[in-house]
Every structure is written in structure tokens, then in C-alpha cells.
Length: 146
Image (cartoon, rainbow, N blue to C red):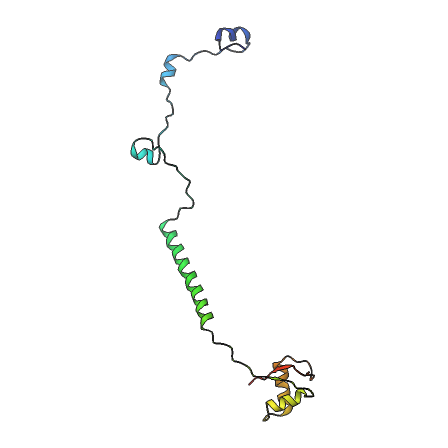
């Protein structure tokens, strides 16, 4: 192809050829100009060697106060839960008895609660140990609630 030559294009093209704008129009145009922002605008010249990284979320003073309050509330709730966990008293120990060969539930219950009626003592021991019947086996550990 040929270098830019207006006279050649006028001959070869059927469209209107490009022409220079009149001088009075060119002088009246305003051109955009780059204006520095940020640190370069304050210092008067370009800042060299400064890397600008995008900032994340920017909080207002009200937002920072809210975040602080939420952190304090979370710490208080967590601290209260931890204090309750440390302050719990150990569960009271429930005495147990081991069933011997040939013993029955009623025999164990009567021995554990001699002042109660046998039927009430059996019910108490059965409920404390989640027993479905009166069967117990030798070596079985039974809890005896007070």
C-alpha cells in the first residue's frame, strides 16, 4: 500500500477525501489535560517509587465504634461461658453396687434401702439404671441414687 498521500486517495476513492480543518476552528478547541491526584497533587510534582494499593473497606467513626462494641460483647459472652465451665462443681457421685452370683434385683434393692418397702426400692433402682425388667446378672454395676 502507499504511504499516506491525500492526492492519491482523492483519485482512488469515490468517497469524500479528508481535508484539514480551517485554522480558526483548530485554535478554538480545548484539549483534555491530565491532572495529578493523591500525593502527587499535594506535593506539586509526580511521586516516584510509591506503589498505590487499593484500599479495602473503609469504616466511619461510627462503624469503628460498632465493631469495638461487638468485639467487647463477644468477649464478655465467651468469657462468661468459660467462667461457667471452670466454675462448675463436679457432679455428685452416685454410689454403685456390684451384683453377685445368685442375687436378684429385689435383694439388691432391699439391701441398699432397708427402710423402704421392697417394691419402692426396686422401682427406685430400676429407674436409676434404666432397667426394663427385674433381671440382673452377676458382675453388673447398679447405681443407687440417694
